[in-house]
Length: 165
Image (tube, rainbow, N blue to C red; front, side, top):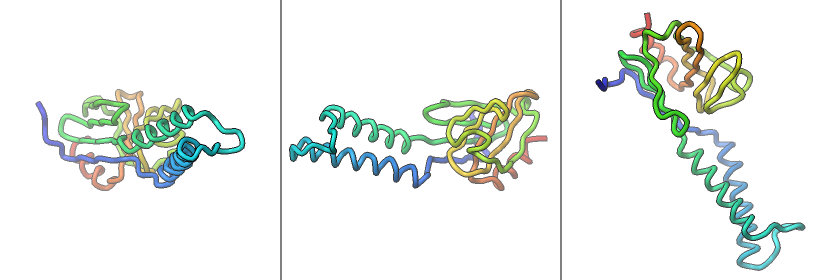
């Protein structure tokens, strides 16, 4: 049965500095490609082949597309907490009766998990996060740890108080 979620949050990677780096690299390689293919001027002191420049441009375009298409959706209803993190997780639902701890907390993404994204840490468990430092910390069946990043910590706390006893 599909229940209407009490809470829904859709997040995307929005680190401007990462987008800037990727677009700058793509721009440099596109410039080199045009310079080498169209104007027949070697790009750099030790130029690479035209096909390698094409591959570099395609690779950075693919990275940019991948980063822009990444999204994480968190839904909470009376059955539990569902996370979709395209393309890593199609859908993962954690039932309320399997959750032994559930609270919102501030965390250090780089120190605790090595950054953002789909992360695994030996001491802190799994993390699904796209930005920021607020997350919903879960302990599942008394042993598995999972942190779900959120940009709506106050709103998610109110919903958690509703369902988690």
